[in-house]
Image 1 (cartoon, rainbow, N blue to C red):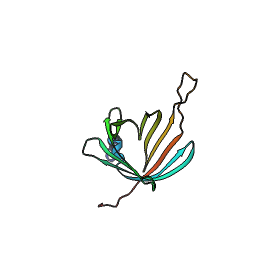
Image 2: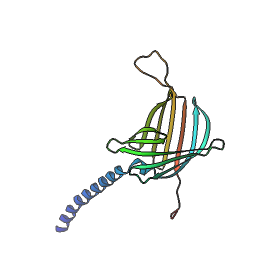
Image 3: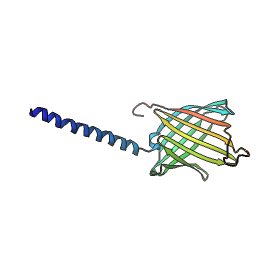
Image 4: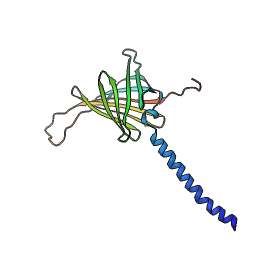
Amino acid sequence: MLEREKSSAIKPICLSMAIFLVSFINVLEAQITFGDKCLGKWEGIMHIYGKGQLRDSVPVQLLVQKTTSPNTWSWKTSYLSKTQPMVKDYTLILKDAATNSYVTDEGDGIILKDYLFQNKLYSVFETQGIFLTASYELIGDQLIFEVSSGKKLEEENKAVTNYSVTNLQRVIFRKIKTPPNQ
């Protein structure tokens, strides 16, 4: 009878410990920043669309590295075009963890505000009459980058302002596995 009582007492303790461990792991995972989740070298093909039609594609590499500043990452994108290669060397900065607010510093005083929802970072901005939306979404071992753009539509509808979406750039990045000791 004593063995049965011990067994009955152990089950709730084991269950409580399991619940605690799962909760603890979830809290730890929530504390890992989006930038830290994206660390590493990524590669993919950018597909460039205009008015719904595929216009071009370009190999792209993304290198995300921690910097010496807290909550700051180097976000370097290399467009490996044969005719117009280009490098965009930006900085991603976590501004407020409580509100999941980030900024992307493009240099030359250009700062984009970013907002994180779960594993997707959003930015919406306008420049020179062009309205753009940009996002990075981390899904498993893929990082999906999209930028869409368009212009304000002149319509008689006074309750809503509409914008066209005439261009889209999209990359599905996959992390490059590096061998140990490199």
